[in-house]
Length: 548
Ligand code: F6P
Image (cartoon, rainbow, N blue to C red; front, top):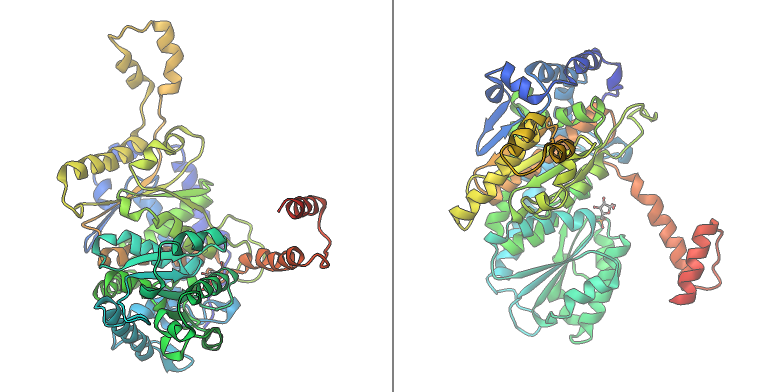
């Protein structure tokens, strides 16, 4: 069954939120805390090893009630059932959206076109497990009889970002294999990676859902040519495997069927790390850790499906985005993990969130008359504090920020961890409270500076505060807790799309540039192929051709 299509701004709940916004927009978070002693408890959700504190957001319990009313009026509950049950909610591509089925237990039942997909999901997982064990144990030998030491994932977008982020984030749990990621069509990218590799001990995993992506096929072809400079054609079967839905094209590339890890078209690229696309994760961490990642995600799926919306971490998180984006008119959201391990997390979420919800046409095909997808950015703390935090504290833009922190560090260095986490806590407090003129003046008191100089400096030293943050405090970075965290953002994306009445699971916006690049490439490769361009592009092309 299709998703309903209602313009959210026409609902009663939206109108009530608009009126409520007028009463709350200039209230300071400090005052909201003073007015309600229970606020911190009431606006915190504790679930498993997650402590999600939403109380430093510019809301009251009434705001949350109204936002939940909005979700109810837009039939979020019904949409969630359709999402998990395999309805064709990616209507513009005619597909179900079932990354959740990839982490469902063996005895679950999820039907696509009348067929339960779970047995096949587990068949592929077994294939991943068996192959992983052979490679990690050294039983899968290369053509010359040597064990594999290096794994190179060749893919882009969802076929790169998810596996790359997870492998980097969970490097503490890695085995002896060294993992590399080649994504950019920039020929210098793969050259830099293969220059130190020994083809005899390297396994290449070509990942492309469609197996038509220019970047991935160019890199795969160039790398295979480099490989064949030192090893014969028969060696390819020991060193190249592929993950794709397009089995025929993979075979045409020269990879035997036994070396193909299939995936289904109901797995979107940016949600595919749970599928065979996660093969590099399994190889790098070992299958058990890959399984724990999936188990964590499944636990979050259950939380999302069953928890009351007022106790539901992804739902509240998504509704807050709507609140800031559509009422406060804020345009971006920052994601700041207080662990260096999650260095690639914001980059990964940029595809997940912006490719999904960067849409301006609603589910009826009309242009929306309200804002949709937000800009996503971020870097780990404390590094980001020394880079862009100035703008979050004292700039003119309102930037709701997620702070992700861990109670335990992985190597157990308490001294460093306390320093790291004191920054995590301090920043959210500083962003909320700010610093008043009186506080600034008090700091100058008793110092050597003249009254005149002080009064000139004061405005620059004042912090307005009232900057909203969400604090996610997780016990420890493990494969399971990372699975939960990623799934939390996946469901947040879904809820946003339902509220904004858009289709979150297509990505037509990336096609136009790809098409034009193809025809321009033909021009660059063949002097006789001339096309009409605007004056700017013509000049640029001429300059490039003359000088290259
Ligand atoms: O950038 C568009 C896109 O289709 C992404 O959605 C996808 O993750 C990426 O390209 C790679 O696609 P494929 O896995 O088919 O090579």
